[in-house]
Image (cartoon, rainbow, N blue to C red; front, side, top):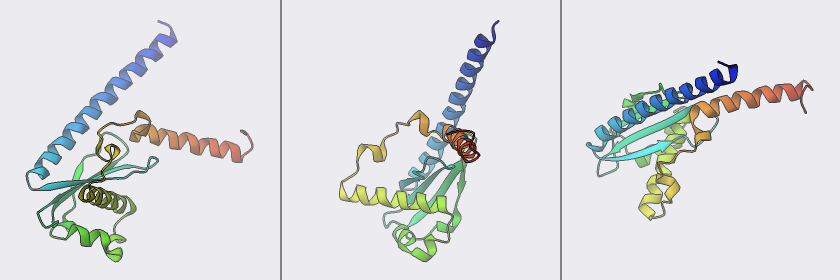
Length: 167
C-alpha cells in the first residue's frame, strides 16, 4: 500500500475514534442533565471562548432560583466528565452572579459560565432568546481539540514571525 492510502485510512480511523468519544461525551451530558432536570429547572452556562479549555456548567434551580445542584465539565478533550460543585448549593443564583466579591473568588472559566447562564436566564425571562442561544449545532472548527491544535499552530507561527523565519 502506498503511504497516501495509509495516511487516508489513519485519518479516517482517527475521525471515527473522535466521533465515538464525542458520542460518549454527549451521553454523559444527557445523563447528568436528566438527573438535574428531575430536581428542577436547569440552566446551562458555557464558556464562549474558543481558544481555551471547554467548560460547561449545569445548574439546577428550584422555583425561587435557589441552586439545588451544580455540576461542571472542564477540559480540552472528550475525556472530560462532570464534577459536582457543592459550594453553590443553597445559594440564590441571582445573588451569586451579581455579587462581585463572591463571583471573583471563582476561577475565570467558572465565572464566565455563571455569567453566560445568567445572560441566558435574563434573555429567557425577557422572551429575547435567539436560536443560537439554545441551538445544539456545533461548528467543527469550534470543537475543543480543534481549537487546541489551532492555538498551538498560531503560537508556533507567532514564534516563527518573531524570529524572522516567517513573514
